[in-house]
Image (spheres, one colour):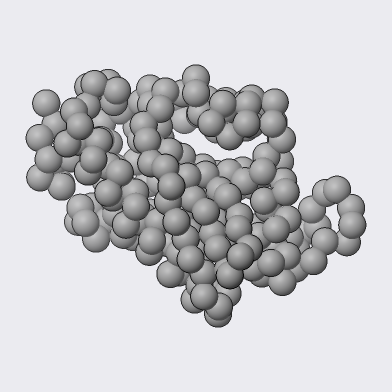
Length: 206
């Protein structure tokens, strides 16, 4: 497996473009789910090593909401959708219309809604990627956890053994009028998955 950080500018540009288009389609799917206009911008798409994943969302000790899905099919890997607690509350209140009861935690209804939103977003992103590549990609049932970012990422990665050494980060910003919510997608492919993705996209791998 060629280390991800050794990929050339053209290969990284292709990954960024796929990330942008996939996120745009995910926004459309979210707007249909909520039956209201939702704008979704992607201010940052980059490749980063595992050691920097937690830092990119506020540090290993930052408490976050994480929805994890295993990506199965022709280019398997792991997908995380991660929100800070305040962003998750704003997403539920302003976009879904589920108001907080004033407690610090999340109700069962709130957690179910967050899982469904992540399921729609990740499913739409993978569908878009599958359309481009003609590869079969399917997410498993989402698993939600609230914990420190470092603990969640380590647990999710250790479960599935051999992994690539870098992740594709897609920062996202949802907008409804002036309301804004930030979220982070991490797609961490298995070692051979990038070869299959690049081959399917007609991009030289070596």
